[in-house]
Image: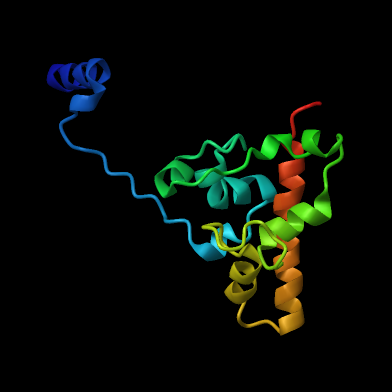
Length: 147
């Protein structure tokens, strides 16, 4: 009993030097699970790599890709205090020829979401994609800095 107590005490004092390594197996986040998340979690999983978790545009992936991701927290401030939902949704979908994201590394999220749901009709896939893009747009509105 005294020996067990000493081992327990050592594990408390030196937690990184346990007798047996504890292996935590995380379940990978699949595209199916990612695509069903609420806007804030969807953003963290799909956008934060480039735009950073706070939306500042300082994500590690943008630096690694050699691109400058826009600061998403200043959208409303740069638009007279109004958040331009339609334009932001168009930018996220990345399917409009007038979209400045064309020919960049930003994925065409509308296409990604549409083709994820292959068992649905074309109309249902488009509605699903618009819903996911609206979730992202609504979340981006919440991270706007005050004017």
